[in-house]
Image (cartoon, rainbow, N blue to C red; front, side, top):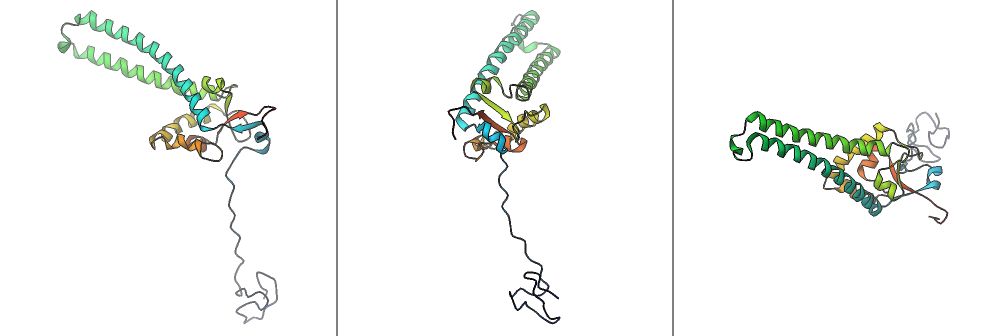
Length: 208
């Protein structure tokens, strides 16, 4: 019989190894290892640097301004059609006695409008971030890109997953977004879940 730690020969009735003190028959305990936090590959880190919280926040504001302007235009169009329907049916004189079918029609129209705008916003983020630009208009304006660990362009499904993960980031009192300000890789919760990174391309003056 031999010691499982140092390999010294033991007698059959030995309780401990005389050389190192290891109990006889005990298997060596593997050393615990702390796995490093996933990050960009070495090649990708030479080309990109992680984008901080505030520049990402500014890009988000630009996107929301764009979305709000487009949404406002469609809102005005919907409002004109809705108001026109009410006037043509009742001339705004007897709102309380409107036909229930008309009321349901108006409510249904607004529900459809909300659904369409929600789907449009999802497609805007998913298509733009999985396109050759790798970012929305706000990110493009500030030189930001959304990439995978190897610096690759993410596909539409992954970009969609990142978009819907933002709802989880928002549900926990926006902590998921704030995480981008203090995590080592500047990732929000939705970035971690989608295994993506928001980066800015390095230039010749960037020696970080």
